[in-house]
Image (tube, rainbow over all chains, first blue to last red; front, side, top):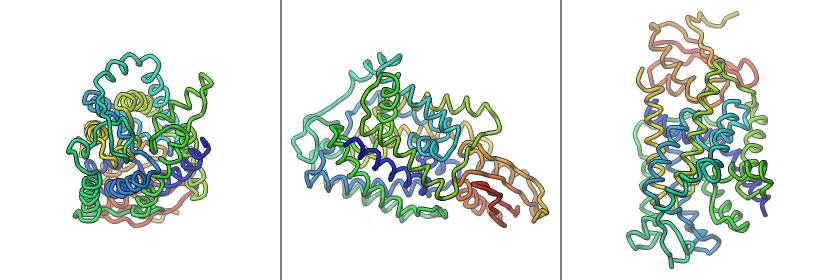
Length: 332
Length: 79
């Protein structure tokens, strides 16, 4: 069943490449370029996903597993990840799919990200992770849409039916996506609405197939990279998420070649490679500390209304804005 | 033969996102009305985003010319 991760990854890679979906850009463009194209795409995706994931859970196909809440790690890790993605020139999914497009800076960023994520989970920085994880909060859930042990969500904290929160959440985001003034448009190969709908369809199927392999979670990136490093260095078994990463790179490469957009791209200034290595390092450390990256937390966790994912995502954005302002925002 | 009387050329091929966009914005600020900026890029996302930013700043995108595999030149007239 691990092969399903590969198929899901290939489809996801094509959507990311055609839709130019990078959350580093989505967060930063709003601040630096006053451009909300990708942010509106993200908002619509989260809105639709919150509904499709809950439908799948209500139908009994999946059990939602909001990540444990940890104020310290979600805030600190989230902020560090946000700083890192700007230096790396892409978020976790951004550097992964751009690796398939032939961007050499993304290769190095992804490698540093993967190695540091592995080191934080089980290597040099693992004591740090053990220490922060003692502050993680989980609760026992009785609602069948959730797994038995979960992190608190807005619905569980308020003690109300998750549908109520989900419908309000989705309505607010749809209102932002379509109602905001000064809408930015771009001639992307995959229109923002189509991209959002496709991800919202793919996300619950991803979760369902992943759960069949014993990994009860949806689309993710960090765990997949950690798995690939472990497969390579310790002969660990390839996981659904590891296969998904390989799929994203293959899917993005196929899509880029088919669209005549594949090219080995190298920056003129070699110092850029140092910059992306530092960015990847911060991303790996931040993502594992925070319990997830922009896909695990933002794209998959926020639609489950997990408080951990909402807190981490707020700090991804704040970290992103801080570094974007330092690097690009001051000299306007 | 050059298509336009280009005043300044910016080659940002291979640069990490969003350097091409930021450099374009900075170059435009130092230019006078009527002058033409040529931006040489190789990243598809920049091809879509730079024209959007340029139009917002009030300048005119004259043409996006495909010059090679995944390489384009954007000609911008400063307003």
